[in-house]
Image (cartoon, rainbow, N blue to C red; front, side, top):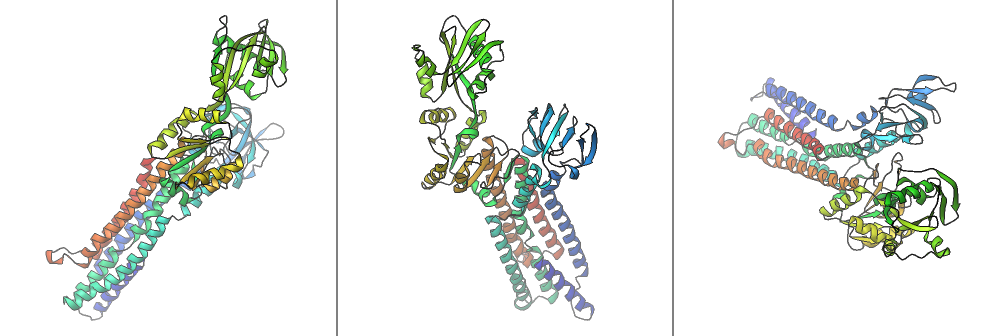
Length: 569
C-alpha cells in the first residue's frame, strides 16, 4: 500500500495547492476515480482471496450442531456437541452426520467419508468399526461410543494442519516478497525519475509531470506479486486436504516435485498386511478346487490363526464341522461331511512321513509364499498357497511414478524370496530385504548418497526414523490418527496412488506459482514504461485511473489463475 498511499497523497496535495492559487491542473476528478477503482479492485481481490481460503470454514461446517445422546436408562436426549464426553453413547440416524469420532457398538450402515478422507465411495461400517466425526451416515442406524471430542478429534486435527500449512511460507514466496520490496523501491525511484525527466529535461508542465509520476506509482503497486504465491498455497492446501492429503511441512511438499526416488515400506503400504490365498493346487483326481477350498475353509473357520482366517475367507461355502481340534504348531483338523479333514503345515507331512512329489510346490515356496496342505481321511488331496496380499492400487502407483521418471524401491523385513515376488508383481526398480526397523533410515541414507532426492513412504510407526531421514516423509494410512509427528505429509487412506497425487499436485502448484510470478513481473515490465509516458509521442498516455484498472486487473488475473489449480485435482 506504500505506492498507492504516496500516489494518492501526492495527487491530493498538489490539487489542493492548485485550489489555493498554484497554477496547474486539478486531479480531484481523477483522484476520486482512482480511489473508487482501487476500492473495487480490493473488493474483487479480497473476494478471490476469501474464496481460496474457505477450506477451514467448509471443514468446520461438516460437524452437526447437536447429537442424540443415549442415556443410562436407554432413553435418547438431544444435546449440544460441547456436552459430549469420551465414553458417551450416541445414536446416529440414517442420513445424519456423525457427531464425534467413535467406535460402533451396534448397527450396520454405509458411511460417506469423502469430505474427510477423499474416499469416493461410501464405506461399509459394522460393529467394532471406527467412524469419524463429520462423515455422513447412510441407510442404517448406528450407535457409537465416543472416543475423542473437541481438539482431539480427527476433524480438529485436520483443520489445524490445514491452517498451519496455509500460513506457512515457501521459498518461492520469500522470492516473491523480496521482489515486491524491490519493486516498491524501483517504483518510488521511478516516480522521482519520471517527474525529473518530464519537468526538468523535457520541460513539460508541472501538472503533466505529476500525473505521470502518480500513474507510475499506482500501476507498479505489487499486489499481484505479493499474492502470486500465497493464493496458490491456500488453494493447493485446501485441495490436498479435500483429497485426504494433509500437509505438515510446506517446503517438503513443494520439494516433492523434484523427487527422483520413492521408497515404500512393504507391509501395510504396498501390501494389505494380511494373508490371502494366491493358489489352490489339486493333488488328487477325486477332488476339485472348490471342494478342496470348502473343506479347508470349514475347518479353519474355527481357528483364530491368521493363516486359518485367510483360508476361511477364501470360500463362501462352509460345511458343518464336528470334533474340531487344533494340532499345536502344525494346523487344525475336524470331521466334515463324515470325512476326517486336516489342514496342516509341511512340518506335519514330514513328521507323518507323507511323501510330496508334486513339482509345483517348491516354486511357490521359493517365492516366499506359505504353503499348507489338505488331507482327507489321511490322504493328501491338495495344497493352498498364501501370501501377503498386494494392494490392487500398488501396481498402478508404481507405473504412474515411473511415468514421472521416479525410481520406485521397497524396504521389507521379509526374506529375499518374498521381497522378490512382491517386487516382480508390481514392477519395482529395486528392493531391500531382511531390513530391521532400526536399519531403515540407513537404507534411505544409502539411496540419498547416490545423489537422489528421496521420499520415504511408510505407516509412520516403526518407519519414523526413515521418514525423518528422507527428503520427503510420507505417512500412509493414518486413518483417524493424524498425529504422525515425523512425517512431512500424511495420507489418510491406505492408497499408494495418493503418493502419485502428492507429486502431481506439487508440480501443478509450482507451475501455478511460476505462472503467477511471470505474469506479475511481466505486467510491470510492460506497464511501467507506458505509465511513465514512453509512448506519449504516439499519443499513448495512461491516466492514474486507467493505471488503477490495470493494477487491479493484474491482481484478479493472479487470483483466478491460482483458483484454476482446482482443475488439476
